[in-house]
Length: 301
Image (cartoon, rainbow, N blue to C red; front, side, top):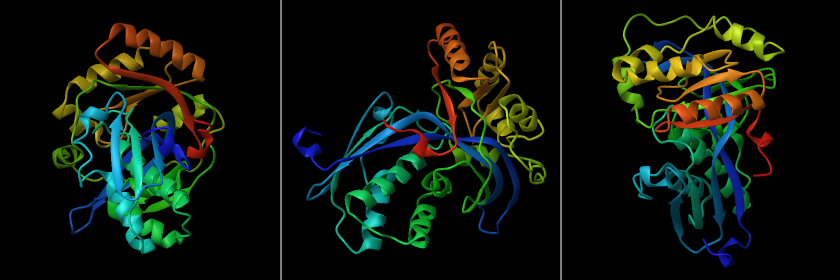
């Protein structure tokens, strides 16, 4: 994207989505699983820049840009742009550049966050005024995680992802994200899940401090962790490594994996622990940061 094409551009972050807990509570007749999850966002993020153009194009860069299957029709960012344009009754036009910093197929909603960012950015670029119902319909058509990424705030999520309930604010909290650089397909993890369904989590309120948050989360689970570990035993090593870091309050896998996270008292403690882990496991993706209460907290980029 040239300097000239940046005239009138919109720049937006697409933060990683974290399942602080994830209970699989049932399954619909059509095969979709019903979930109960507490979802937050991380300061670690992709970046999307959109600018005016007469055609719709997408370029990819960043550490994980080459891991995507190019900018073909199946790319969620382009799907989001076309879906929004169709609802608005206008051509899908714009030059888009996605800087991919989040690993692909890693359980932190990177593609969903990118799609939500595209919707938000193009609404602004095209000066649209879609209704909340239109935006919700577009988001759910793109994937189960897109609605909460579009909402952009910490939420209790139910159904297949469409049930989004606002909850209290999270305490200030440091965070370390770790991925062994091995992709893990969500469908394969759900297929490998066995046993009875869980009950919804007993999690009535968010504690005021990070130690209390970690203690409350220990009474919940990620029900996809066991099948993911069976498919990729390396997740055991990742969780053990995170749990062994100085100051780690809880270590857990996010989503369908293989990304795992550790919570820390503050961002400084997370940065120190991250440096130690990255030095010992140089082949892993290790990223320090903090939990966000809303994606809008991540400004300026």
